[in-house]
Image 1 (cartoon, rainbow, N blue to C red):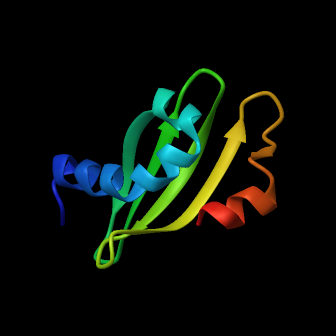
Image 2: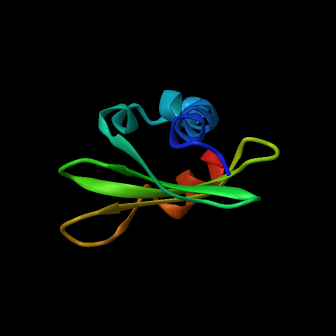
Image 3: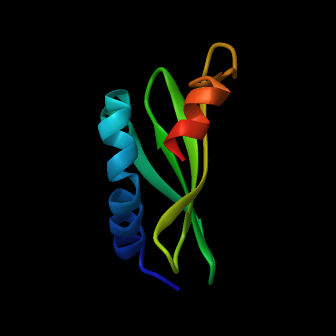
Length: 86
């Protein structure tokens, strides 16, 4: 199993292109939720909402990304924009 520090570094690296495209993500705090042999599960959180992230440990690529607001639990951004980012 990865240490939390190494897991965070892997997630930060995988999210760099996404953070360049969606600059609001830079205001979110990264929290590692779980690691397994294959993936790292993490959340990005701030006062406005959160994003759930799944990173493939082997490829260090984003496998899943869902962004929600606290008010509505609506997924952000739109499905079309999400598909373009992943």
